[in-house]
Amino acid sequence: MEKKKIYISGAIAHHDLEERMRVFGAAARYLSLKGFEPVNPFDNGLPQPGDWRAHMRVDIGMLLGCDCIYMLQGWELSKGAKLELDVASSCGIEVLFEGMG
Image (cartoon, rainbow, N blue to C red; front, side, top):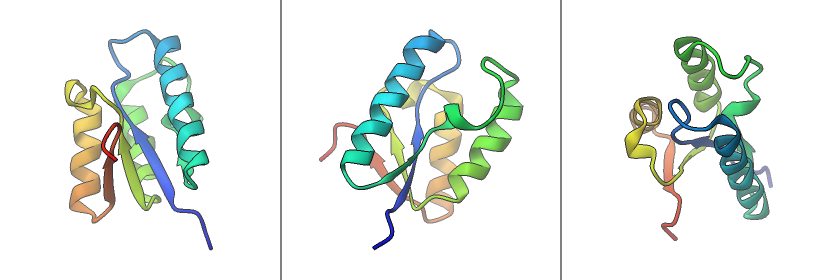
């Protein structure tokens, strides 16, 4: 059976980039152990840090290719994560929240 692709979403801008990379990497490892194929926006091929709009355009494209979105704790504080959640919900992509089940 094919693994479900799951996009990791959370706050990045205005945070320590190295810390965020560690958090997203840990989430990817966790989701992989749970049987998902994680899609990490830090692997979008663009330079870090970079232009927010350029990142969002690529990241939303990555999200649209996924079956699920995984919202990291603190996502509510991120303009980009809120946008990704709205896109996922509007497009019928299953939403999972860190710490919920």
